[in-house]
Amino acid sequence: MHPAVRTGLAPLVVFTILGAPLVAQFDPAAPEPLMPVGGTVFLGGGGDLPAEVFDRFVQLAGGDKDKLVVVTVSDTAVVPEPLAGVTTVSVTSGKGKQLSDAVAAVGNASGVWLVADTGEQMAAMLRDSVVETALHGLLLRKGVLGANGDAVRAFAQTTITGGEVHAKLGKGLDLIPGVVIDPYYSPASQQSRLLGVLAGQPRLVGLGIESSTVLVLHNRWFDVFGEGSGYACIAANLHLPVRVERLHADVSPRTQRRAPRAQPRNGGARPRRRGRQRRTRDQGYRPKRLEDLLAMSRAALARTRDKFPADKPPEPNVAKGSLMIVGGGGSPSGFMDKFMELAGGKDALLLYIPCTESETATAERTLERWRKAGATNVDFIHTKDRHLADTSEQIHAKLRKAGGLFFGGGRQWNLVDSWQHTEAHRLMHEVLARGGVIAGSSAGASIQGSYMARGNSLGNVDAMAAGYETGLGFLTGVAIDQHFTQRGRQPDMTKLVNRYPQLLGIGLDEASSIIVQGSIATCFSREGRNVHFYDRNLPVVHGQPDYLRLKNGQRFNLATRKVQE
Image (cartoon, rainbow, N blue to C red):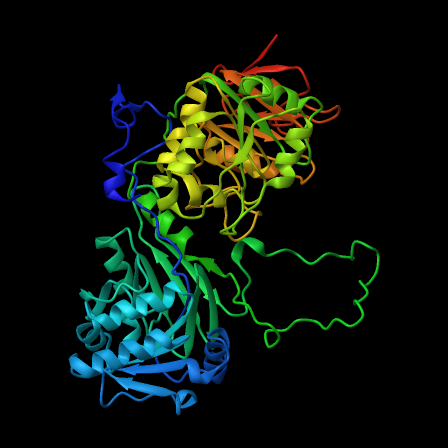
Protein backbone atom coordinates (compact mmCIF):
# COMPACT_ATOMS: atom_id res chain seq x y z
CA MET A 1 0.00 0.00 0.00
CA HIS A 2 1.36 3.42 -0.86
CA PRO A 3 2.28 5.47 2.24
CA ALA A 4 0.28 8.46 1.03
CA VAL A 5 -2.79 6.28 0.86
CA ARG A 6 -2.22 4.70 4.24
CA THR A 7 -2.15 8.05 6.03
CA GLY A 8 -5.53 8.91 4.57
CA LEU A 9 -7.35 5.86 5.93
CA ALA A 10 -10.30 6.37 8.20
CA PRO A 11 -9.04 6.89 11.78
CA LEU A 12 -11.28 4.14 13.17
CA VAL A 13 -9.09 1.48 11.58
CA VAL A 14 -5.86 2.70 13.04
CA PHE A 15 -6.93 2.99 16.67
CA THR A 16 -7.25 -0.06 18.87
CA ILE A 17 -9.25 -0.99 21.93
CA LEU A 18 -7.38 -3.01 24.56
CA GLY A 19 -4.81 -3.83 21.89
CA ALA A 20 -7.29 -5.42 19.45
CA PRO A 21 -7.90 -3.81 16.04
CA LEU A 22 -11.44 -2.56 15.49
CA VAL A 23 -11.45 -4.25 12.10
CA ALA A 24 -10.31 -7.85 12.41
CA GLN A 25 -7.22 -8.81 10.42
CA PHE A 26 -7.00 -5.59 8.48
CA ASP A 27 -3.66 -3.91 9.11
CA PRO A 28 -2.80 -0.64 7.35
CA ALA A 29 0.73 -0.91 8.75
CA ALA A 30 1.41 -4.29 7.14
CA PRO A 31 4.55 -4.26 4.96
CA GLU A 32 3.76 -3.91 1.28
CA PRO A 33 4.30 -7.27 -0.47
CA LEU A 34 6.30 -7.65 -3.66
CA MET A 35 4.63 -7.29 -7.01
CA PRO A 36 5.54 -9.47 -10.04
CA VAL A 37 8.47 -8.22 -12.09
CA GLY A 38 6.35 -8.09 -15.24
CA GLY A 39 8.77 -9.69 -17.66
CA THR A 40 11.32 -12.50 -17.52
CA VAL A 41 14.78 -12.38 -15.93
CA PHE A 42 17.63 -14.85 -16.60
CA LEU A 43 20.01 -15.09 -13.63
CA GLY A 44 23.05 -17.12 -14.65
CA GLY A 45 25.56 -18.55 -12.24
CA GLY A 46 29.25 -18.64 -13.01
CA GLY A 47 30.92 -20.77 -15.65
CA ASP A 48 29.77 -21.64 -19.16
CA LEU A 49 26.00 -21.71 -19.63
CA PRO A 50 24.27 -24.36 -21.72
CA ALA A 51 23.32 -23.32 -25.25
CA GLU A 52 19.71 -24.07 -24.32
CA VAL A 53 19.73 -21.02 -22.03
CA PHE A 54 20.33 -18.61 -24.89
CA ASP A 55 17.85 -20.44 -27.13
CA ARG A 56 15.21 -19.85 -24.46
CA PHE A 57 16.33 -16.26 -23.98
CA VAL A 58 15.82 -15.57 -27.68
CA GLN A 59 12.55 -17.48 -27.75
CA LEU A 60 11.00 -15.69 -24.78
CA ALA A 61 12.15 -12.36 -26.20
CA GLY A 62 10.06 -13.04 -29.30
CA GLY A 63 12.45 -15.08 -31.44
CA ASP A 64 13.82 -12.13 -33.42
CA LYS A 65 17.54 -11.52 -32.84
CA ASP A 66 17.16 -8.08 -34.40
CA LYS A 67 15.14 -7.13 -31.30
CA LEU A 68 17.92 -8.19 -28.92
CA VAL A 69 20.57 -5.91 -27.43
CA VAL A 70 23.73 -6.56 -25.43
CA VAL A 71 24.65 -3.74 -23.04
CA THR A 72 28.23 -3.89 -21.78
CA VAL A 73 29.78 -1.67 -19.13
CA SER A 74 33.28 -3.06 -19.63
CA ASP A 75 35.86 -3.03 -22.40
CA THR A 76 37.21 -6.37 -21.22
CA ALA A 77 34.09 -8.41 -20.35
CA VAL A 78 33.23 -11.09 -22.91
CA VAL A 79 29.88 -11.23 -24.71
CA PRO A 80 28.50 -14.82 -24.59
CA GLU A 81 29.27 -16.63 -27.86
CA PRO A 82 25.59 -17.46 -28.65
CA LEU A 83 24.88 -13.69 -28.64
CA ALA A 84 27.74 -12.80 -30.97
CA GLY A 85 26.36 -10.65 -33.77
CA VAL A 86 23.59 -9.19 -31.62
CA THR A 87 23.58 -5.37 -31.49
CA THR A 88 25.97 -4.30 -28.72
CA VAL A 89 26.09 -0.92 -27.02
CA SER A 90 28.75 0.18 -24.55
CA VAL A 91 28.26 2.26 -21.43
CA THR A 92 31.78 2.60 -20.15
CA SER A 93 31.85 6.33 -19.41
CA GLY A 94 28.30 6.95 -18.23
CA LYS A 95 28.13 10.13 -20.29
CA GLY A 96 26.50 11.76 -23.28
CA LYS A 97 26.03 9.79 -26.49
CA GLN A 98 26.78 6.42 -24.86
CA LEU A 99 23.81 6.86 -22.54
CA SER A 100 21.44 8.11 -25.25
CA ASP A 101 22.44 5.28 -27.61
CA ALA A 102 21.93 2.69 -24.85
CA VAL A 103 18.54 4.10 -23.85
CA ALA A 104 17.37 4.09 -27.48
CA ALA A 105 18.57 0.53 -28.00
CA VAL A 106 16.97 -0.78 -24.79
CA GLY A 107 13.77 1.12 -25.53
CA ASN A 108 13.34 -0.71 -28.85
CA ALA A 109 14.48 -4.12 -27.59
CA SER A 110 12.42 -7.13 -26.53
CA GLY A 111 15.43 -8.71 -24.82
CA VAL A 112 18.58 -7.28 -23.22
CA TRP A 113 21.66 -9.14 -21.95
CA LEU A 114 23.96 -7.25 -19.58
CA VAL A 115 27.72 -7.79 -19.55
CA ALA A 116 30.17 -6.63 -16.88
CA ASP A 117 33.31 -7.81 -15.13
CA THR A 118 31.62 -7.52 -11.72
CA GLY A 119 28.26 -6.68 -10.29
CA GLU A 120 29.86 -3.78 -8.43
CA GLN A 121 31.07 -2.36 -11.74
CA MET A 122 27.64 -2.70 -13.33
CA ALA A 123 25.87 -1.09 -10.39
CA ALA A 124 28.31 1.81 -10.26
CA MET A 125 27.92 2.53 -13.98
CA LEU A 126 24.14 2.16 -14.34
CA ARG A 127 22.65 3.01 -10.95
CA ASP A 128 20.44 6.13 -11.02
CA SER A 129 21.06 6.54 -14.74
CA VAL A 130 18.60 6.79 -17.64
CA VAL A 131 19.76 3.31 -18.69
CA GLU A 132 18.64 1.86 -15.37
CA THR A 133 15.23 3.49 -15.92
CA ALA A 134 15.10 1.98 -19.42
CA LEU A 135 15.84 -1.50 -18.01
CA HIS A 136 12.96 -1.18 -15.55
CA GLY A 137 10.80 -0.12 -18.49
CA LEU A 138 11.83 -3.23 -20.42
CA LEU A 139 10.46 -5.45 -17.64
CA LEU A 140 7.29 -3.36 -17.30
CA ARG A 141 6.49 -4.04 -20.94
CA LYS A 142 7.12 -7.76 -20.36
CA GLY A 143 10.52 -7.91 -21.99
CA VAL A 144 13.38 -10.29 -21.15
CA LEU A 145 16.53 -9.36 -19.24
CA GLY A 146 19.57 -11.51 -18.53
CA ALA A 147 23.13 -11.69 -17.26
CA ASN A 148 25.45 -14.29 -15.78
CA GLY A 149 28.29 -14.59 -13.35
CA ASP A 150 29.20 -11.81 -10.97
CA ALA A 151 27.14 -9.26 -12.95
CA VAL A 152 23.97 -10.92 -11.69
CA ARG A 153 24.56 -9.56 -8.18
CA ALA A 154 23.66 -6.06 -9.41
CA PHE A 155 20.07 -7.09 -10.24
CA ALA A 156 19.18 -6.77 -6.54
CA GLN A 157 19.10 -3.61 -4.45
CA THR A 158 21.25 -5.15 -1.71
CA THR A 159 24.32 -6.71 -3.32
CA ILE A 160 27.12 -8.95 -2.13
CA THR A 161 30.36 -7.30 -3.18
CA GLY A 162 32.84 -9.59 -1.43
CA GLY A 163 33.75 -11.50 1.70
CA GLU A 164 34.33 -15.23 1.85
CA VAL A 165 32.55 -15.87 5.15
CA HIS A 166 30.90 -12.59 6.08
CA ALA A 167 29.52 -10.75 3.08
CA LYS A 168 30.43 -7.19 2.21
CA LEU A 169 27.37 -5.38 0.96
CA GLY A 170 26.70 -2.72 -1.64
CA LYS A 171 23.81 -1.15 -3.52
CA GLY A 172 22.52 -2.49 -6.83
CA LEU A 173 19.85 -1.68 -9.43
CA ASP A 174 16.78 -3.17 -7.70
CA LEU A 175 15.62 -4.82 -10.93
CA ILE A 176 14.32 -7.68 -8.77
CA PRO A 177 13.01 -6.15 -5.53
CA GLY A 178 13.18 -7.98 -2.23
CA VAL A 179 16.11 -10.29 -2.95
CA VAL A 180 19.85 -10.64 -2.52
CA ILE A 181 21.67 -12.81 -5.09
CA ASP A 182 24.78 -14.97 -4.76
CA PRO A 183 26.05 -16.55 -8.00
CA TYR A 184 28.89 -19.09 -7.94
CA TYR A 185 26.88 -20.49 -5.05
CA SER A 186 27.63 -23.75 -3.25
CA PRO A 187 25.38 -25.00 -0.42
CA ALA A 188 28.45 -26.32 1.36
CA SER A 189 30.61 -23.20 1.22
CA GLN A 190 28.46 -20.14 0.50
CA GLN A 191 25.18 -20.88 2.26
CA SER A 192 26.35 -19.46 5.59
CA ARG A 193 27.41 -16.22 3.88
CA LEU A 194 24.01 -15.79 2.22
CA LEU A 195 22.15 -16.68 5.41
CA GLY A 196 24.31 -14.16 7.25
CA VAL A 197 23.01 -11.42 4.96
CA LEU A 198 19.44 -12.56 5.60
CA ALA A 199 19.97 -12.58 9.36
CA GLY A 200 20.70 -8.86 9.14
CA GLN A 201 17.98 -8.16 6.54
CA PRO A 202 15.30 -10.78 7.23
CA ARG A 203 12.72 -9.27 4.88
CA LEU A 204 14.84 -10.33 1.89
CA VAL A 205 14.79 -13.63 0.01
CA GLY A 206 18.25 -15.03 -0.68
CA LEU A 207 18.84 -16.52 -4.13
CA GLY A 208 21.82 -18.83 -4.62
CA ILE A 209 22.78 -20.06 -8.09
CA GLU A 210 25.26 -22.85 -8.76
CA SER A 211 27.77 -22.65 -11.60
CA SER A 212 26.59 -23.51 -15.11
CA THR A 213 23.01 -22.99 -13.96
CA VAL A 214 20.39 -20.33 -14.75
CA LEU A 215 17.54 -19.35 -12.48
CA VAL A 216 14.71 -17.98 -14.65
CA LEU A 217 12.24 -15.64 -12.98
CA HIS A 218 9.13 -15.33 -15.12
CA ASN A 219 6.76 -12.74 -13.64
CA ARG A 220 6.90 -14.37 -10.17
CA TRP A 221 7.63 -18.01 -10.95
CA PHE A 222 11.05 -19.70 -10.94
CA ASP A 223 12.32 -22.23 -13.47
CA VAL A 224 15.86 -23.62 -13.77
CA PHE A 225 18.10 -24.52 -16.71
CA GLY A 226 21.51 -26.11 -16.64
CA GLU A 227 23.45 -28.68 -14.72
CA GLY A 228 22.94 -27.50 -11.16
CA SER A 229 20.34 -26.01 -8.87
CA GLY A 230 19.07 -22.72 -7.62
CA TYR A 231 18.21 -22.07 -3.98
CA ALA A 232 15.66 -19.74 -2.39
CA CYS A 233 16.31 -18.98 1.28
CA ILE A 234 14.64 -17.05 4.09
CA ALA A 235 15.98 -16.30 7.56
CA ALA A 236 15.04 -18.00 10.81
CA ASN A 237 13.11 -16.25 13.57
CA LEU A 238 12.26 -17.13 17.19
CA HIS A 239 9.64 -19.66 16.12
CA LEU A 240 10.81 -21.05 12.77
CA PRO A 241 14.14 -22.39 11.44
CA VAL A 242 15.96 -21.26 8.31
CA ARG A 243 14.06 -22.27 5.17
CA VAL A 244 15.98 -23.32 2.06
CA GLU A 245 14.17 -24.48 -1.07
CA ARG A 246 16.19 -26.29 -3.74
CA LEU A 247 15.11 -25.66 -7.33
CA HIS A 248 16.27 -28.10 -9.98
CA ALA A 249 15.18 -28.55 -13.59
CA ASP A 250 14.18 -32.18 -13.10
CA VAL A 251 12.38 -31.75 -9.79
CA SER A 252 8.68 -30.96 -9.84
CA PRO A 253 7.30 -28.42 -7.38
CA ARG A 254 7.60 -29.89 -3.92
CA THR A 255 3.89 -29.58 -3.23
CA GLN A 256 2.79 -31.25 -6.46
CA ARG A 257 4.65 -34.55 -6.27
CA ARG A 258 2.25 -37.44 -6.53
CA ALA A 259 2.74 -41.18 -6.47
CA PRO A 260 1.92 -42.61 -9.92
CA ARG A 261 -1.49 -44.23 -10.24
CA ALA A 262 -1.44 -48.02 -10.25
CA GLN A 263 -3.87 -47.93 -13.16
CA PRO A 264 -5.32 -45.15 -15.32
CA ARG A 265 -8.80 -44.05 -14.35
CA ASN A 266 -10.35 -45.47 -17.49
CA GLY A 267 -8.80 -48.88 -16.85
CA GLY A 268 -6.30 -48.69 -19.67
CA ALA A 269 -3.97 -46.43 -21.56
CA ARG A 270 -5.47 -43.09 -22.49
CA PRO A 271 -5.71 -42.81 -26.29
CA ARG A 272 -3.77 -39.96 -27.85
CA ARG A 273 -5.92 -37.48 -29.71
CA ARG A 274 -5.46 -37.54 -33.46
CA GLY A 275 -3.45 -34.77 -34.98
CA ARG A 276 -2.01 -33.81 -31.64
CA GLN A 277 1.61 -34.33 -30.63
CA ARG A 278 2.88 -34.63 -27.13
CA ARG A 279 4.29 -31.31 -25.94
CA THR A 280 7.95 -31.18 -25.00
CA ARG A 281 10.11 -28.39 -23.64
CA ASP A 282 11.10 -27.68 -27.26
CA GLN A 283 7.52 -27.19 -28.42
CA GLY A 284 5.79 -24.13 -27.08
CA TYR A 285 7.97 -23.98 -23.98
CA ARG A 286 6.52 -22.16 -21.01
CA PRO A 287 8.60 -21.70 -17.84
CA LYS A 288 7.85 -24.22 -15.11
CA ARG A 289 6.62 -23.08 -11.75
CA LEU A 290 9.20 -24.56 -9.41
CA GLU A 291 8.85 -21.85 -6.75
CA ASP A 292 7.06 -18.54 -6.26
CA LEU A 293 9.16 -15.49 -5.36
CA LEU A 294 6.12 -13.61 -4.04
CA ALA A 295 5.15 -16.46 -1.72
CA MET A 296 8.73 -16.74 -0.44
CA SER A 297 8.83 -12.99 0.12
CA ARG A 298 5.50 -13.03 1.96
CA ALA A 299 6.83 -15.84 4.16
CA ALA A 300 9.95 -13.79 4.93
CA LEU A 301 7.86 -10.71 5.78
CA ALA A 302 5.58 -12.77 8.02
CA ARG A 303 8.59 -13.95 10.03
CA THR A 304 9.40 -10.34 10.94
CA ARG A 305 5.94 -9.72 12.44
CA ASP A 306 3.94 -11.01 15.40
CA LYS A 307 3.46 -14.77 15.53
CA PHE A 308 0.53 -15.97 13.42
CA PRO A 309 -1.79 -17.51 14.28
CA ALA A 310 -1.60 -16.05 17.79
CA ASP A 311 -1.51 -18.52 20.67
CA LYS A 312 -4.88 -17.10 21.77
CA PRO A 313 -6.68 -15.77 18.68
CA PRO A 314 -9.91 -13.77 19.06
CA GLU A 315 -13.02 -15.92 19.43
CA PRO A 316 -15.04 -16.40 16.24
CA ASN A 317 -17.77 -13.77 16.28
CA VAL A 318 -19.55 -11.78 13.57
CA ALA A 319 -20.79 -8.86 15.67
CA LYS A 320 -23.01 -7.48 12.91
CA GLY A 321 -24.13 -8.80 9.57
CA SER A 322 -23.80 -12.37 8.33
CA LEU A 323 -21.38 -14.72 6.62
CA MET A 324 -22.43 -17.42 4.15
CA ILE A 325 -19.56 -19.87 3.66
CA VAL A 326 -20.02 -22.56 0.99
CA GLY A 327 -17.88 -25.64 0.33
CA GLY A 328 -17.97 -25.36 -3.47
CA GLY A 329 -19.51 -27.76 -5.96
CA GLY A 330 -22.87 -25.98 -6.07
CA SER A 331 -25.06 -24.34 -3.47
CA PRO A 332 -27.86 -25.63 -1.24
CA SER A 333 -31.42 -25.08 -2.41
CA GLY A 334 -32.62 -21.61 -1.48
CA PHE A 335 -29.10 -20.20 -1.12
CA MET A 336 -29.65 -17.25 -3.46
CA ASP A 337 -32.91 -16.29 -1.75
CA LYS A 338 -31.15 -16.29 1.61
CA PHE A 339 -28.23 -14.28 0.21
CA MET A 340 -30.60 -11.58 -1.10
CA GLU A 341 -32.55 -11.55 2.15
CA LEU A 342 -29.43 -11.03 4.29
CA ALA A 343 -28.15 -8.37 1.88
CA GLY A 344 -31.31 -6.29 2.37
CA GLY A 345 -33.66 -7.61 -0.28
CA LYS A 346 -33.72 -8.12 -4.04
CA ASP A 347 -32.96 -4.42 -4.70
CA ALA A 348 -29.80 -4.35 -2.54
CA LEU A 349 -26.51 -4.01 -4.41
CA LEU A 350 -24.86 -7.42 -4.75
CA LEU A 351 -21.21 -7.47 -5.76
CA TYR A 352 -19.43 -10.48 -7.24
CA ILE A 353 -15.65 -10.69 -6.65
CA PRO A 354 -13.92 -13.13 -9.03
CA CYS A 355 -10.93 -15.17 -7.91
CA THR A 356 -8.58 -15.35 -10.87
CA GLU A 357 -4.92 -15.00 -11.79
CA SER A 358 -5.91 -13.01 -14.87
CA GLU A 359 -5.60 -9.24 -14.85
CA THR A 360 -8.99 -8.98 -16.51
CA ALA A 361 -12.20 -10.75 -15.58
CA THR A 362 -15.83 -10.86 -16.61
CA ALA A 363 -18.76 -11.86 -14.46
CA GLU A 364 -21.77 -11.63 -16.76
CA ARG A 365 -22.74 -15.30 -16.45
CA THR A 366 -22.82 -15.05 -12.66
CA LEU A 367 -24.65 -11.74 -12.70
CA GLU A 368 -27.22 -13.09 -15.15
CA ARG A 369 -27.94 -16.03 -12.81
CA TRP A 370 -28.46 -13.55 -10.00
CA ARG A 371 -30.87 -11.54 -12.14
CA LYS A 372 -32.84 -14.67 -12.99
CA ALA A 373 -33.05 -15.40 -9.26
CA GLY A 374 -34.71 -12.02 -8.73
CA ALA A 375 -31.83 -9.64 -7.92
CA THR A 376 -32.28 -6.24 -9.55
CA ASN A 377 -29.00 -4.51 -8.64
CA VAL A 378 -25.89 -6.57 -9.43
CA ASP A 379 -22.30 -5.67 -10.30
CA PHE A 380 -18.73 -6.92 -9.82
CA ILE A 381 -15.29 -5.63 -8.86
CA HIS A 382 -11.91 -7.03 -9.89
CA THR A 383 -8.31 -5.90 -9.98
CA LYS A 384 -4.86 -7.45 -9.71
CA ASP A 385 -3.38 -4.01 -8.98
CA ARG A 386 -3.14 -3.38 -5.24
CA HIS A 387 -2.71 0.33 -5.87
CA LEU A 388 -6.14 0.38 -7.55
CA ALA A 389 -7.60 -1.63 -4.67
CA ASP A 390 -6.29 1.16 -2.45
CA THR A 391 -7.22 4.20 -4.51
CA SER A 392 -9.95 3.43 -7.08
CA GLU A 393 -13.01 5.49 -6.24
CA GLN A 394 -15.01 3.32 -8.62
CA ILE A 395 -14.23 0.20 -6.58
CA HIS A 396 -14.66 1.97 -3.25
CA ALA A 397 -18.01 3.54 -4.22
CA LYS A 398 -19.43 0.12 -5.07
CA LEU A 399 -18.24 -1.36 -1.78
CA ARG A 400 -19.73 1.54 0.20
CA LYS A 401 -23.14 0.87 -1.34
CA ALA A 402 -23.07 -2.93 -1.29
CA GLY A 403 -25.46 -4.97 0.82
CA GLY A 404 -23.82 -8.25 -0.14
CA LEU A 405 -20.46 -9.51 -1.43
CA PHE A 406 -19.82 -12.90 -3.01
CA PHE A 407 -16.27 -14.24 -3.47
CA GLY A 408 -15.97 -16.71 -6.32
CA GLY A 409 -14.03 -19.94 -6.61
CA GLY A 410 -10.50 -20.44 -7.92
CA ARG A 411 -7.22 -20.24 -6.01
CA GLN A 412 -7.61 -18.16 -2.89
CA TRP A 413 -4.09 -16.69 -2.93
CA ASN A 414 -5.30 -14.52 -5.82
CA LEU A 415 -7.79 -12.81 -3.52
CA VAL A 416 -5.01 -12.15 -1.00
CA ASP A 417 -2.80 -10.62 -3.69
CA SER A 418 -5.56 -8.31 -4.88
CA TRP A 419 -7.23 -7.09 -1.70
CA GLN A 420 -5.47 -7.86 1.57
CA HIS A 421 -4.67 -4.79 3.73
CA THR A 422 -5.94 -2.33 1.11
CA GLU A 423 -8.69 0.27 1.53
CA ALA A 424 -10.99 -2.07 -0.38
CA HIS A 425 -10.35 -4.74 2.30
CA ARG A 426 -11.41 -2.29 5.01
CA LEU A 427 -14.57 -1.42 3.08
CA MET A 428 -15.41 -5.12 2.81
CA HIS A 429 -15.44 -5.28 6.61
CA GLU A 430 -17.73 -2.26 6.58
CA VAL A 431 -20.31 -4.27 4.62
CA LEU A 432 -20.62 -6.47 7.69
CA ALA A 433 -20.51 -3.53 10.10
CA ARG A 434 -23.64 -2.02 8.54
CA GLY A 435 -25.49 -5.34 8.70
CA GLY A 436 -24.80 -6.76 5.23
CA VAL A 437 -23.64 -10.20 4.18
CA ILE A 438 -20.37 -11.62 2.86
CA ALA A 439 -20.62 -14.94 1.03
CA GLY A 440 -18.26 -17.11 -0.94
CA SER A 441 -17.77 -20.60 -2.33
CA SER A 442 -14.69 -22.83 -2.52
CA ALA A 443 -11.77 -20.35 -2.55
CA GLY A 444 -14.35 -17.76 -1.54
CA ALA A 445 -15.01 -19.84 1.57
CA SER A 446 -11.38 -20.30 2.68
CA ILE A 447 -10.61 -16.61 2.21
CA GLN A 448 -13.15 -15.67 4.89
CA GLY A 449 -11.26 -17.26 7.78
CA SER A 450 -8.45 -15.63 9.69
CA TYR A 451 -6.21 -18.60 8.82
CA MET A 452 -6.39 -19.33 5.08
CA ALA A 453 -6.20 -23.05 4.41
CA ARG A 454 -4.82 -24.37 1.14
CA GLY A 455 -3.21 -21.12 0.02
CA ASN A 456 -0.15 -22.54 -1.75
CA SER A 457 0.30 -20.73 -5.05
CA LEU A 458 2.10 -23.76 -6.55
CA GLY A 459 -0.88 -26.08 -6.20
CA ASN A 460 -3.81 -27.06 -3.99
CA VAL A 461 -2.23 -30.08 -2.31
CA ASP A 462 -1.00 -28.45 0.90
CA ALA A 463 -3.44 -27.32 3.58
CA MET A 464 -0.74 -25.07 5.07
CA ALA A 465 1.39 -22.76 2.96
CA ALA A 466 3.90 -20.29 4.42
CA GLY A 467 3.41 -16.87 2.86
CA TYR A 468 -0.28 -17.38 2.25
CA GLU A 469 -1.60 -18.33 5.68
CA THR A 470 -3.61 -15.19 6.46
CA GLY A 471 -7.03 -14.71 4.93
CA LEU A 472 -9.25 -11.65 4.87
CA GLY A 473 -10.32 -12.44 8.43
CA PHE A 474 -14.08 -11.90 8.42
CA LEU A 475 -14.28 -14.83 10.86
CA THR A 476 -11.46 -14.93 13.41
CA GLY A 477 -9.95 -17.96 15.14
CA VAL A 478 -10.82 -20.46 12.39
CA ALA A 479 -9.37 -22.26 9.38
CA ILE A 480 -11.85 -23.20 6.63
CA ASP A 481 -11.37 -25.91 3.99
CA GLN A 482 -13.77 -26.87 1.21
CA HIS A 483 -14.62 -29.73 -1.22
CA PHE A 484 -13.98 -31.59 1.99
CA THR A 485 -15.23 -35.18 1.91
CA GLN A 486 -15.37 -35.24 -1.89
CA ARG A 487 -11.61 -34.67 -2.14
CA GLY A 488 -10.64 -36.61 0.97
CA ARG A 489 -9.29 -33.62 2.84
CA GLN A 490 -9.95 -34.87 6.39
CA PRO A 491 -6.29 -35.84 7.03
CA ASP A 492 -5.17 -32.38 5.93
CA MET A 493 -7.38 -30.67 8.49
CA THR A 494 -6.16 -33.09 11.14
CA LYS A 495 -2.58 -31.98 10.41
CA LEU A 496 -3.57 -28.33 10.45
CA VAL A 497 -5.30 -28.36 13.85
CA ASN A 498 -2.59 -30.61 15.31
CA ARG A 499 -0.10 -27.90 14.38
CA TYR A 500 -2.38 -25.02 15.39
CA PRO A 501 -4.66 -26.42 18.14
CA GLN A 502 -5.77 -22.89 19.04
CA LEU A 503 -7.73 -22.75 15.78
CA LEU A 504 -11.16 -24.23 15.17
CA GLY A 505 -11.05 -26.23 11.94
CA ILE A 506 -14.09 -26.16 9.66
CA GLY A 507 -14.40 -28.60 6.76
CA LEU A 508 -17.24 -27.98 4.30
CA ASP A 509 -18.54 -30.64 1.95
CA GLU A 510 -19.54 -29.58 -1.53
CA ALA A 511 -23.02 -28.00 -1.57
CA SER A 512 -22.82 -27.54 2.20
CA SER A 513 -22.50 -24.22 3.96
CA ILE A 514 -22.71 -22.41 7.24
CA ILE A 515 -24.48 -19.13 7.92
CA VAL A 516 -22.65 -17.30 10.70
CA GLN A 517 -24.33 -14.64 12.82
CA GLY A 518 -22.70 -13.68 16.07
CA SER A 519 -20.92 -16.83 17.23
CA ILE A 520 -23.57 -19.22 15.90
CA ALA A 521 -22.97 -21.20 12.71
CA THR A 522 -26.13 -22.72 11.22
CA CYS A 523 -25.59 -25.56 8.75
CA PHE A 524 -27.35 -24.92 5.46
CA SER A 525 -26.68 -27.90 3.23
CA ARG A 526 -28.05 -30.31 0.67
CA GLU A 527 -29.17 -33.73 1.84
CA GLY A 528 -26.18 -35.94 2.63
CA ARG A 529 -23.70 -33.05 2.66
CA ASN A 530 -22.17 -32.11 6.00
CA VAL A 531 -20.02 -29.65 7.92
CA HIS A 532 -17.09 -30.91 10.03
CA PHE A 533 -15.75 -29.10 13.11
CA TYR A 534 -12.27 -29.90 14.43
CA ASP A 535 -11.72 -28.91 18.06
CA ARG A 536 -8.44 -29.84 19.74
CA ASN A 537 -9.89 -28.92 23.13
CA LEU A 538 -11.64 -32.29 22.88
CA PRO A 539 -9.76 -35.57 23.36
CA VAL A 540 -8.82 -37.49 20.23
CA VAL A 541 -9.75 -41.17 20.51
CA HIS A 542 -7.78 -43.61 18.39
CA GLY A 543 -9.96 -45.19 15.73
CA GLN A 544 -12.69 -42.57 16.13
CA PRO A 545 -13.31 -39.46 13.99
CA ASP A 546 -11.44 -36.45 15.35
CA TYR A 547 -14.25 -34.07 14.37
CA LEU A 548 -17.93 -33.34 14.92
CA ARG A 549 -20.09 -33.80 11.83
CA LEU A 550 -23.24 -31.68 11.55
CA LYS A 551 -26.00 -31.81 8.96
CA ASN A 552 -28.50 -29.34 7.55
CA GLY A 553 -30.30 -27.30 10.19
CA GLN A 554 -27.95 -28.07 13.07
CA ARG A 555 -26.28 -25.18 14.88
CA PHE A 556 -22.80 -24.86 16.34
CA ASN A 557 -21.48 -22.26 18.78
CA LEU A 558 -18.08 -21.26 17.40
CA ALA A 559 -17.05 -19.54 20.65
CA THR A 560 -17.92 -22.33 23.10
CA ARG A 561 -17.27 -25.01 20.45
CA LYS A 562 -20.47 -26.83 21.33
CA VAL A 563 -23.47 -28.02 19.36
CA GLN A 564 -26.51 -25.85 20.06
CA GLU A 565 -29.50 -27.97 21.05
